[in-house]
Image 1 (cartoon, one colour):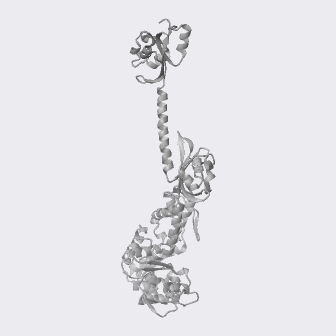
Image 2 (cartoon, helix red, strand yellow):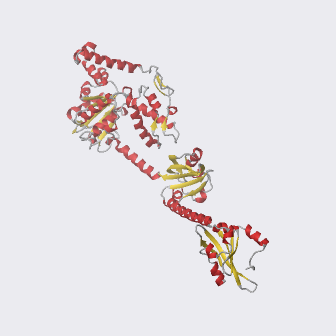
Length: 574
């Protein structure tokens, strides 16, 4: 075997290469094994020399090559815990006789593992591509520089753009109106939700959610999911038109929609529930913005008439003659421009249901006389006609003026006053139920989130304290205005109303600065009318107590009429 034994120089070269090298003689014993082979095989070089190759490499095919003389090139072979790629060759002498065999091999375990991982990654990539391409929502991906790197078919369908229009282009290339969600995400490294935009050449309305792509906390790009809401918006617009048509024919609210936690509101809600089960006419009293219309809706929906129509009439919005024709209708030719065949009035249209006369104190004396006939005789006469038409309608009236004073000055009929005041309900102003502000404010958040497309979740405790220190002359309507303006002042990614979002709000001489400290012990400035009203209420309660609840004696002691006393009792809920 001396013929294949390497000389000194060749041994140095063989020891230096990284591939394993094993040589055997004609008897199958190992005569050469370089350091790389010993390391791959996990054996001691001295221990392996002159040993049968089968003892060192149990599954070796070198003996087969020695026997057949056929080389085996680039064959994969599994060792105990490794995979090698080997080539086995016969060794011949000068006469072409086989005198041994040699194997050259390398460890490919890591390469095999990487190949398997690449295969898995390709399978995952194929699955993700199938999912991305199948979704009906458009997907857009940009790199950390804000340039497009991926879009799916739904994106192309919604925007009308193809890959060449957006890939490698700035993230703003597809936006027709609004701010790029990708740029917002890349600048803040935070997700954003529910951003309304117009995209593509057709300026389609879309709702976009965006999120950062972070790899080991390194920003690699941004992904956006785009929802086409153009059809939804069109349907909503049609629905809004339908609602405008039928808004006077239905009641939208119930008692569950009324926030009532203060004793005064709990009492008036209980009175309203009881009144709803009667056919009696109801008069809703209270300042502007306290929720009188809300009560009217709830009373109708809790009554036996809830399955019939609910018609709301703003008496202050119509002139006397126009209001008369709207309420009672008119006959053919009643006036110039009258519809041929005449027109049914709202009292006829509301047959079997409820008609809500808001701002009833604003109607003219002529219309008051006709309204009195409806209450007394249950019938109406159309404008320009003499025929009487029977109607079955329940009347709920509301006003924010002092009807007692209006009667005294001749602006409101006394007989009509007593007809509509069968069940009077006084709704307290917001300043008398400040405890309800947190619940009211959070209820309004839901409304604003829908209207503004926002996700405001809460109001900071110190903001609620500021709101509860204000007298609210505009009542709930003013609270709604302030919260709406606060949300407009917020950034899109902010979810809680804080002090800095509150506008400076004023009402006449009273101003509530947003800088009021939590421990501010200063006296709360209130309008003089509010202070006088509180004093009047307490004084009336005291005089009634002194007269053991006898209203006649109490009115005489205070030198006011009994009728005026009853009005004040209703007004203050006494």
